[in-house]
Image (cartoon, rainbow, N blue to C red):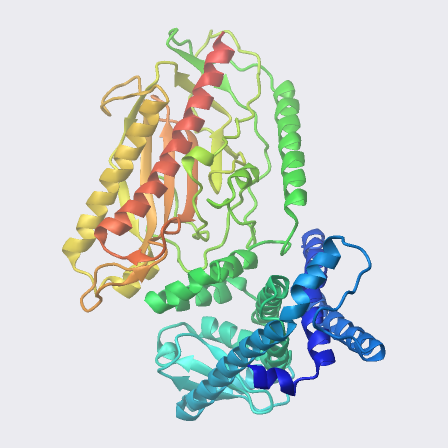
Length: 620
């Protein structure tokens, strides 16, 4: 080290060391400004956010270079002696800091140089490995090369892009700038539908059109220069995230349907659901899930402040509409009933529930406060419409969203109109109730009848639960799993959902009775679109998972007279494994699906209790 120190100019050492030290607070200021800008401009396009993030990284490097130049010129002109230099005339804290660090500037610079070389060599090794993959890859069928050329022309890319297959990659990747290639996992072309593959290819071609490979190389150099700087590393992560988001936007623009792209991402993640892929995904804070959720958000990156304000406005408008409508309802004559039950007139918004392709993501377990937002029906990334149920007609499956912890959930009380109670005199002819949507955070959809009769004795009969596997799951795993396995899963999950419902209603003070009880509310429930990511199939051992899967729930509550007064529907992912990826087996899968069922059961019991409590209030 002494030989190396003697070879370096002391003025150069002084300027380099203090420039690197000053870069810590300088880059922190730049990162703080960037974070503030990104927070207040979440509705901006990903391309603009990407450019601003790149500008922030360039600003950090520019400030570093400027500081080095000024310090070096000052040292040369003043002929500063680095060791023991007294830069300040006072005995303040800065004087003590300079005096303590100046004798060790050579060591600091040498440590930085070693770190820079290590990072640079690692990057060069990665580049060499990628080129080896490129050489060993094999061309795809000519049909897909023609499709790629057509997509390339659509994006106005001048370079020739080769489509290759490699057994050494687990996902699509792009490499090269002047002669770019796209590498596909071996066999992927036979595992995904054509529209999903085209959407994924558009994403990779977007990287080529934006020259991301070249920009990423320059970004790597800057990151290696300031590898020790947390602010710079955070800025680089923002650049990487917005780069992917920008390419996602281009892919969706040209493929025309975000469902194809989202389904492609989800299917690739599942096809390659092994330990290394899951650990890498968790290390990046589940960026894939965030990208999929972003595809189904109407205004990408809309600020949460704006979301909450809009939610409050919507809730206030809904309450006003309910009460205004209630004031206009003429009293109805109802069937004379004993004191045990009371007729309830409910006025809800009369507009049909919209069915947008894009929807805001549901609350996550990491954001308890997010459950106050209004949840709307979402489009499915992977699942297709499921088999029929005795509860409702089959529907397009919305995408799953992470489930919130029951303890963190804050239920939103239903806004029901306090309509005047008519005197029971003359019986009227029964007719099918009209169901209207009520927005709540715990379910994609809650439908409530405008009029219904409920008994005040809190008794509920839970009918046998049905379990339906998702069509796409059956297509992929039905031949790989035994019939006895599927039947056992259906029985076990039906029993667990039944127990969860019984426990939740008892916790609300209800009595669970036999279905023959004529004075009880009847609950029909079905677990639909069940998709277990890693079922027990022959030849698959020790599969590592971060999530167990996804499922939907469909429930209908009926009054003793058989009229449905409330339906609920929701689709969600199971929560992430709290302690990291775990081995998939029947017990692990059941553990996380059980939490999902308990969440749904608790929400259903709470809303049923609220409706019954309002019946009691109106009866008084």
